[in-house]
Image (tube, rainbow, N blue to C red; front, side, top):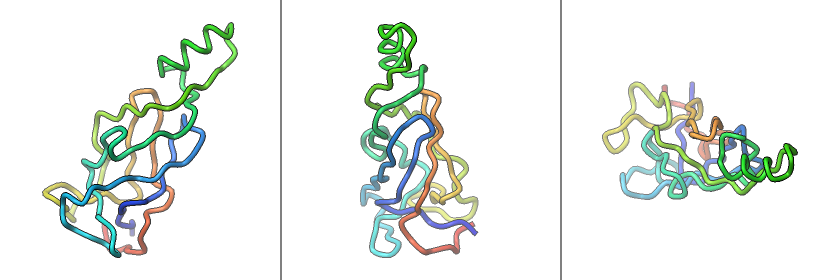
Length: 129
């Protein structure tokens, strides 16, 4: 069984260098263990998904430019997430705020070639499919 994801859950991006905490705004008015519960639409860059430290993806224009200026030596630049699509797949049966609940098996794709995953859901609730 997957775990429900809440505000403060820990995430990691495959192209980032540091973990980050998911920010879930209390707009859906659903809590799990005294924290706002997340749904798949909690994917907005710098609102829900903050920076992951230096980004090593050459698809990220700042890193590509810095790497080019360093004559091909990979030069990671500060991450600016670009997540335009929701977390997938989410829960097929549990809805929060009219959208599938976010569980710890979901992934979010960054346009800069990173895959963001949940490393700690921030809750012990495991009754979510």
